[in-house]
Length: 487
Image (tube, rainbow, N blue to C red):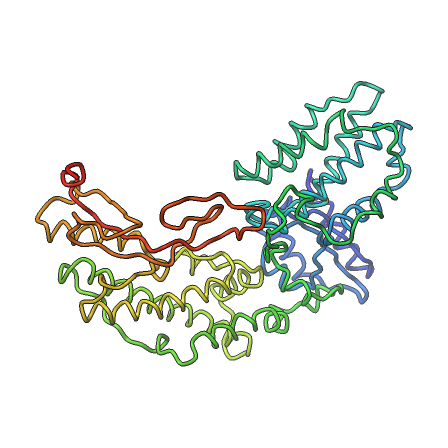
């Protein structure tokens, strides 16, 4: 599709529908604005038995969900491991494509491309240390890279490595990257894989090189430490792919949504939510909005945090309850439930949840974090009620808005000292209480990544050190700037 093929596609669709033939429309992600017209045409068809319509597309946020729901879907993804990735690439290339022109340097450059493509895809196993997020490096990138190398070797002219670096970094692979750190990694790989120094006249049997690779990748293949852990984010919809049916369906028998697919794909999330709230009164707890301008700033913050936490839990519960009713067939499908299900099936946190609190991007982690914080805040309320909150060691990770708590502490300090908030500065101490502080808190549960700290010395990590280590509790307070300089 694309380049003015819309009218031709519709005419071919009508003809295949009348004759009972099969039709494949490719690259629909390039014509998302035209897809509503395709939907309308499909609804008006009266196809002959045997007619099948195949659609191919890459992931696109504006792809119509109704068109997806009326189809059976198959997801084609990269195989796990460098070895299988390279084998699949060479199985997609014919011997004639590789040996075209009889130039050994061209074949070696294609081998570098295949290896570079495999490394970019398999590095996604180590999010966020490998890449900071999941990038959709796909076969279309590989095909574009193949065409560039093929054209640069035409006519026997000198190969332009800088040209390859620029196109791959700015237009093909780099066009998907939006993080400066990831872009530096990509640039480093381009300099390693696409260089005249890498080509060797003795390397010609690529198949044997690939087959001698180990089945399991080691982090060292990607320049990562040996103790790094694999990420669960390798494939965005990995839990859903196993549920998809690898069958074609006649457009005449399409349904509004696949209830079985929704049930299989969303049951783990619904069951987790039920388990998290067993024995908890959060779902049915009633709490009034805190009154403004009354009490201390810290107590007002705790009351507001409790109110928002309970309201968030109950809002999530209502949305998941509506989703469960749609799956059971006791409630009609609404656009809100459809958006919620689509996000959860793609292992993405719904925007309606993230708008209330920007937590983890993975839905199950998000639900665990919400319930854990909501329960912990109940304990904060109990300690605040007996005036013992600032006397205990606090864990700021139990709050939804820890920065707001520190600002409330600043307000209460200024009120108790009768001074302006602007005259206070934030200080901390790892060893003992802060002598010049009117109010202070002891914060525990702190962790440090990349090194270790015992309260006195900061030590560099060794090769076998854990990536994250706990640090001692820290005293924090707001003190007048004058008293800080006087000490």
